[in-house]
Every structure is written in structure tokens, then in C-alpha cells.
Image (cartoon, rainbow, N blue to C red; front, side, top):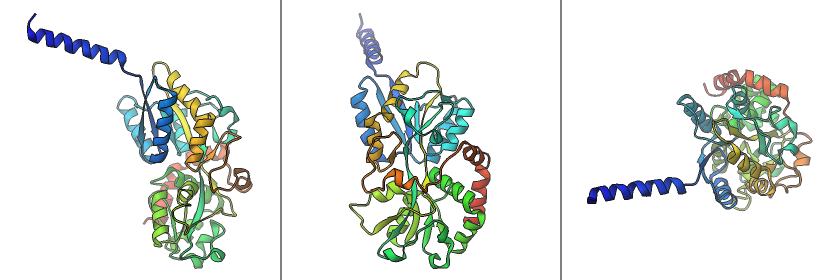
Length: 331
């Protein structure tokens, strides 16, 4: 046997062994923050050593765009999706792109934040609140409602994210437009409100005092409670905006059992505690509230709740809401 043939045989044997020993791969596409992803990945590796679990992490809009592009190219690589654009999940379920599955533990999730057809469920609850920089705004003069941000005393002081960049900001805009109409946003524009980017952009503007008041996800503010005490949280009296950090399994050929097992983990105690550790509320009863947060039962008394009718309405008007927002706030 010549040396070249021997090398070829050894190479083929090594390749065959590698393929035989390789772990099945699963991909999770998510908008969870990077530190949360790192924590979850370690826990999944411990609980599911038989799989290689990979993550793609980005903002909700970017994750959705990546899945849409991959789908057009022949099929997404993602097995599990976790991000905050519930309307996108509803649309994908209707198109037959999601795997029907009710994860173990998700039966206790409130009906208003999951698919009636078992295409998806909220896996954690972020909430949109107001924050302010106490170096600029005293506690006694802090805002109390979303609605008052159109009043003259807040001119040049308020900032929001954009529904063009962020799923949670789209939900916030949709709920506030439903409650107060587009005149509310015209009032924000007259007040020189900066409405750009996502939650991190809002937080930076409040911290830098460029705009000392903003709406932002509670989790962003709570992450700073031990490092930046000047950032204060207001739970608006006209209701926090309840978000839906949504989990779904993509529809693919072959067994979806591995993805189902990992979905089950997210609704079990360990998975829910990982969500709370990232300063979001759990969706399964019996899990503690995030550190520094008001009890979920308390904020739910005034929160703006979901309904099937609202989901359908916001889905139908999704693009027109974005267009009108851009026309009023960004032109």
C-alpha cells in the first residue's frame, strides 16, 4: 500500500469517526441579553450534554429578519426562537412555519400571553416603565404617567425607543396609540422627544442627561440598581406596558423532540429562574420576582393587558402603525 493511499484511508476513517461522535446541534435565535445567553447556555450544556446548543443573539427585529431571510433561502437553521415580537410569532404560526407544541409547565401560563393553537408561549414578562435621572429630576417632580409626557414641563427632557428598531417599543407604541390616539405622539414630537433605537439607546440618553426621562424595559433599569443609583424607576399610574418574551419551536423535517425537551426546560423552575435572574418576571407561578422589582400581582392591577382581539388588530395595522409613527416622530 502506497503512502498516499494510507493517508487517504486514515483521513476517511477519521472523518467517519468524527461524524459518528459529533453531537446533534440545535440553534436558538434570541434577543435575550448576552449575559443571560451565557448563563442559559451553561445550564443547557449541563442539562443536555447529548446536544450541542448554539445561540444567535441580536435584537428582536434583527432576529426576525434573519429567520425570514433564511426561510426564503430554503429554511432557517433556528430550532428555537425566543424574542419579544409576539405579532411576528402569530403571523408565522398562521403561515405554518412553527411547530405546534405546549411545553411542559406552560399550561400554567396565562392564556392571554400564549397561542391558542400551541404555536408559542411567553416564557418571561418584560414590562415597559418610565425611568428618570435623579441628578436632574427630583423624586417629588418625577413623572407619574406615560400620558403626561406631552405636557410642557417635559419639553426637551423625554426619550423613547422606536418601533422600527425594537419589538418591545412597537408593542408600547401600539398600546399607547390605542389608549391615547396619534395626537399623543404629535404631543411628544412637539415636546422635542427623541424617539430612536432600542432600549439600550434610551438608557444611554437618560444616563448622559441628554434626555433625563425615558420609557425603557424594567430589566434595563434593574440591572443598574447596584451600579448607577441615579437611575430611578417609575411604574406609571396609567399602567405598565406588558410585553411578551415569546418562545416557539420552528417547523422542520425530522424529530422535534430535542427542541421540545429544551423548550420544557425553559418553563421548568431552573429556566424560569434564569429569566428572573435577567430581571424579567416569570410566567409560571411560584417563582420569585426579579430583585428590586415590585410584585407582579401589584403591577398587573393597572397593566395594559393583551386580548386575542388586540393581537389581531395590531397585526392587521402593524405596518401602518410603524409608518404613522415614522411620519410623526422621525420626519
